[in-house]
Length: 217
Image (cartoon, rainbow, N blue to C red; front, top):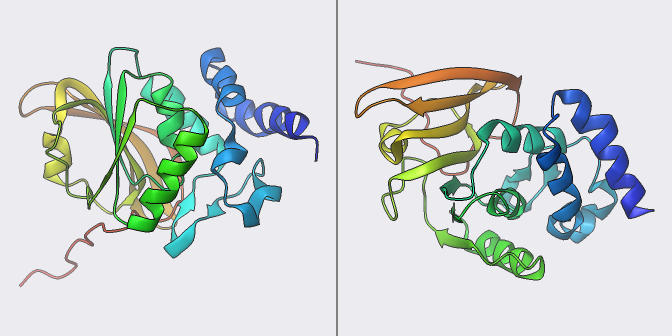
């Protein structure tokens, strides 16, 4: 496989047609090598339009979803970012190139260790990988300028809303399969939030997320 040709095809045939037109984001996909974050068993799918399986039922988003999220979050160089759900570390690496610092929280210790290894090999130094369950929020280092939840949630927990600064934004995929949407939630005041639905998708639920109670007595 000609890796650079495959990367070019991924960008031009999958990502750009999906309304990812920000040249900085497209250039970043050449800089952060996706294949360095894909498990060895799936290297032949590193640039394919599929979710790539990770251990313990987790998965990498497909490339166009990753790129579109990075574009829509529009992270700036002075901002501190929180990611919930580290997975392979690829999304944290993309965000790290645009942010001051990224804190990424992973529930599973073996996944955390693999992500740290991937990030170190890629030469990414401004990411801290924490172990824990951030699905309901993450107090350490809060409030953050930008929060990304790298997995679907059935509903948005109050703790996550409280973890973002006033003026900051939170990117989250909400809903139940197959009807999910990626939303940008901007905190407008201590108690006010504006939500914009950006695109529809269908991804794996975040590991460790609480299912909402279906029955109220």
